[in-house]
Length: 157
Image (cartoon, rainbow, N blue to C red; front, side, top):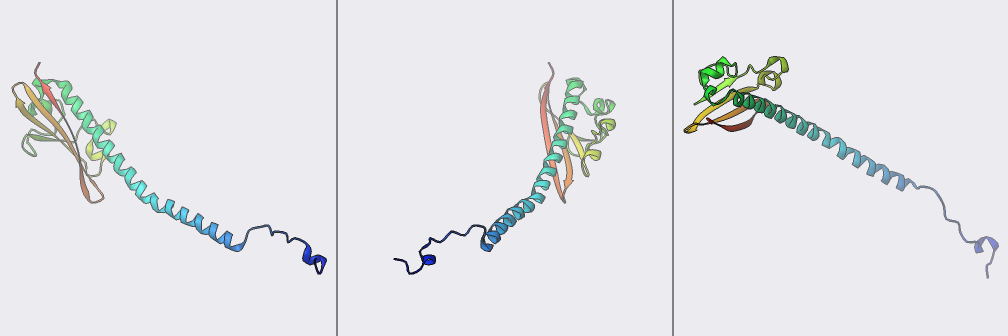
């Protein structure tokens, strides 16, 4: 039997949170927060890269569609200069001509849209009555030169 009444009573479990539990949960929360904050610069850099690539591809696509719309017979340096689709008939590379003047009002100029943005149009006769047109957009991003290219074939039908 019990020597005293106090000793025979079952002990009640203590309720509440211990200091160790509070410290452990605080540590876990801090680790999670630091992971989130550490990934923010990487996410921002990736978003900026994707945004620039999207702008470059949109510029290239618009230029390519405009050149395709002038027709096979007009895809020559002289005719593209008359249509204001290239800057000069002087090539910047073999069969490649620069363009910077595409629709300034709509901000479709590579130099305005991208950092140090430059565009070029390459025209090659690859077969009788078939011309290949390649649009290249170059820009600077974090001390690296980046490039986007888009091309098509235009036939004399």
